Image 1 (tube, rainbow, N blue to C red):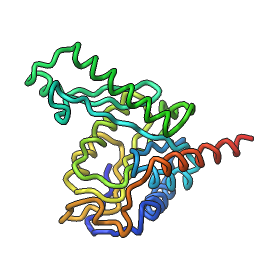
Image 2 (image 1 turned 90 degrees about the horizontal axis):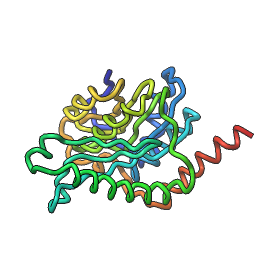
Image 3 (image 1 turned 45 degrees about the vertical axis):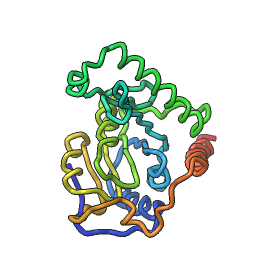
Image 4 (image 1 turned 60 degrees about the vertical axis):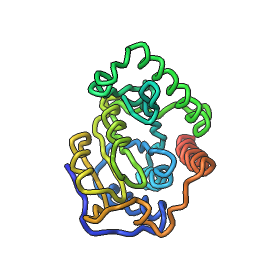
Length: 228
């Protein structure tokens, strides 16, 4: 199910975009939500959604598996979580005759980087539980959709009850493609002349690691305070 609008919307900043998405999601009956934000830019957007829905906020880290000698050419990706998932591109692997041993080595190398970044952002906090919940995948916008598509495909293995992709802006054709990977796609603007995500923000300053750490910590503290 998709809900995206053709009109070009402009957002003040990522917080504004998150609040607008949050208003749309809060109007729905979403059971047991968990917000999974793609860092770094997706975290300020996801924070507003998680706060509005009173939901946990976690990062969804995706690392590309590079081809032998050509790291920029992806043969798959690893997506972190309680049980990290690997998504492979069989055509690329066959074309380049990549061995299973290389894939395993590259997977392990990227898992080390994922663990380093997770520890940086989340400390000792465990990844959010996804099984049986409504997983809301959030970014500050989508251009090609490659990273988000990998994340959504990997999430299926974590057995969420439902998956919702929520983004402020993206090309309509990319949203159509991604709609097969999620139960619902919510996008506030799908302009026909889309060129870049940042063009739809008045302030598109790069999100820092420090801001990611602070927002994730604030959300964990808010939920912990409720349990006391």
